[in-house]
Image (tube, rainbow, N blue to C red):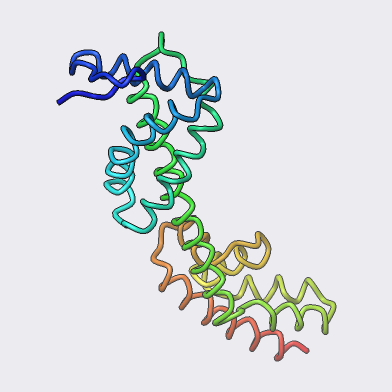
Length: 197
C-alpha cells in the first residue's frame, strides 16, 4: 500500500509515517491541504480507538470530530523529535475518549444523586422541628437515645451534609441499608422531639 505525497507521487510504505509527520508539521503552519491529508489518513483509526473506549458509535463520531478540530487548532504543539504524528494524534484521541467517559460517569452520578434527594428529602422535617423548638440540646439528647447504627448516618448526613451515597461510602455499608437506617432514625428522632415538646 502506498500513500500519496504532497507532490502527487506515491510515497513508499516505509516512509508513510515520515510523510504523515511532515504533513502534520505543514498543517501546523496553516496548510489546509496538509491538514486534509492528515485528516484523511487518521480520522478512521482515531474513530476506531475512540469507539473501543466509549463503545458508542454516535459518541465516538462526535468525539472524533472534536479531536480533529482540536488537532487543527493545536497542530503547532506537535514535536516530531518526541514521536510520530500517528502516535501523538492517537494519544490525543485516547485522552479525549477517557475524558468523555469521565464526563458521562460524573453526569450519571449527579443525576442519581438528584433523583435520590428528590424522591425523599429526609432532613427537611428534622430541620423544621429544630427551628420550631429552637432547642439544640433536645436534639442532641434525642440523637443520643437512638441506636448507634441509626444515629451515625443521621449525624453524617444532617451535620456533615453528606448524601445517602456518601454516607454509605463513608460507613462501607450498602446505600439501601443506610437509607433504611436513616428513615427509621428520623422516625425515632421525630417521635422523641415531639414527646419532649
